[in-house]
Structures are given as structure tokens and as C-alpha cells.
Length: 333
Image (tube, rainbow, N blue to C red; front, side, top):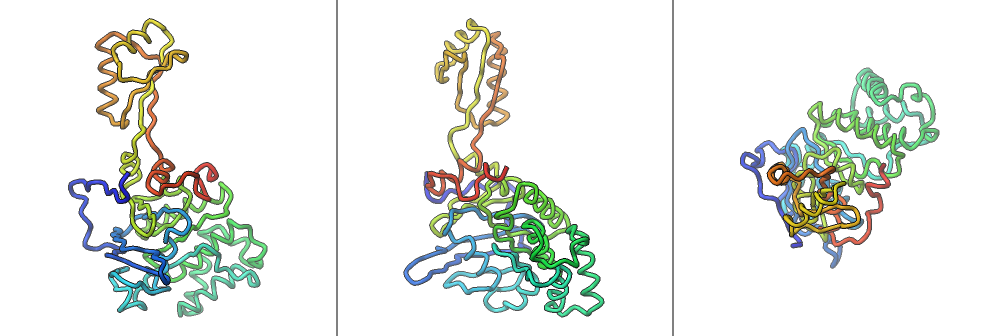
């Protein structure tokens, strides 16, 4: 597959003028190693954008540049309508960042962590305490608020970390692998929190190696490989880029199976299972065509199943990877 595959935009899918995050030709190198090689992004407000890629692909570098933690070597970017180079302070005032590693101070309580963040945002004591109480309640941390953060579970620390990010009421949040190391229940709790944030109009820029996470949360997904965007689109658009989809027809009547196999010569046969496999993109039109054909020839399949490529298949095809990412969909379950 070509190294750069972009789904054809649907009519009316043009980029909105009020994008929360946009970038053109963003580049970053360290010595002779190019980490980002001219990436373009356009992320609508109030959506979840997921950036996928293998370790070392440049995901965290992209987050650091867009959040003004480091500077790019080339290209332009705007976050919340502000240029990241000429107006970094305005960008910082509009965003929140939760990195791969927790920023929680384990030596103080959860409440003290929150109040410290409120002080950093120059909130008054009254406003800081009000924001702290509301966020601790929202993230189900009120009962643990007076305990040292070092006693929190991994899931509680990640919730506290995100709560601290929200003290400044940012409209754009960068979540760099926010659920790494969490158990499945804590991961699903974090997903629900992210959905609620987006429902409130917050824009979320998510990097993850959990393919299921991107599939569950993201409105649009980009796959980053060798410093370039290999493909971008909705989860369904990306899945349709990958060949291998098929419809499987299984029969219990050997005569019906033989009749169907004789008529569908392009189908792969499984004589032992009395099953036929037809290439298909899983679209409604193709399924209707198959069902219409079965009806027209008076053949009844006892079972019809559809397989379409998943994000694992997309990841492997676009990155040239031969193994599941460090945090795979299987591990996420």
C-alpha cells in the first residue's frame, strides 16, 4: 500500500474555518533524525482527534510542539486561533495537557494537588476551592481528597491528573496516552470522562497505542508513520482502505452448498465446513446484492457473517508493522 493514503473527502466535509487545531507542514528534527516530516492537521472544535503510530513515530513530539513545550523546525500551526510561535502564552491559556506520566505530587493530598494547580492559574482562593470541590466530585475523588496522592490507585491518579488539567477550564485538551497502564475498568472510566468533556464542547487531541481506544472515542484518526501522516479519516474510512473484507456463507444442506458454489465460482470454498467466502467491503449494497442473488436462485444460506478489517489491520498495513503495538486492542479488553 502507498505510504500516503488519504480518503476522498465527502461532499460538505471541508475543513471548518474555526478549527480548534490546525497545522501545515509541521517539521521537527533532532540532529540528522527527522521526527516529523511536514504533517498537516485540521481538527474541528468539540471533537476527538486520535493520533496513532508505533513507538517513536513522533506522536509525543507533535503534542509537545502544539502545546508550545518545544518549537518546530518548520511549518505553521494554530491552536485555539493563536499561532504557536508568535502567541505561545495565548495558546497555553487556552489548553490543558495530560502527559504520558502523571504530574501528580504523591507527597501531598489530592485536594492539595488541585489547590496548587488553582494557584498556578491565579484563581482566587474562593474560586480555587470551588473549582477543586467541583472537579473532585466530578471525578469521584471526594472521599480520597484528604489522602496523600501516593496512596491512590493508577486509575485514581490518572483521574486526578486530568482533573488538575481542567482547573483552568481549557477548551482544548491534549491527552498523551492517558490510559497507559490502567486496568480495563479504569480505562473505560476514563473513556466516559472523555466523552463527557466532548459533550461539553471540549476538543480532545488524543495519542494512543490502544487501537480500540481510538475506535471507541475518535471522530477522526490519523496514522503517523516515519514522521508522515500515512492516512487520515474516520475509523470506518480507514478500515475501508484495507483489503481483506469478506462475506462468509455457511450451509447445512450439501445440495444447497453445491448449487451456490457452482454459481459463485469466484468464491473460496470450504467443503468441510460447507462454507463459501466472497470478497466484500461489507457495504449495504454488496450485502443486498448477495441476498438478492440467493433469493433469485432459491438457495438459502443458514448463516451469513461479514468480516471487515479493523484498526489492527489498518495499523499493520500503514506502518509496515508485523506485530501488535505495545498496547494492543487485545490487551485493552
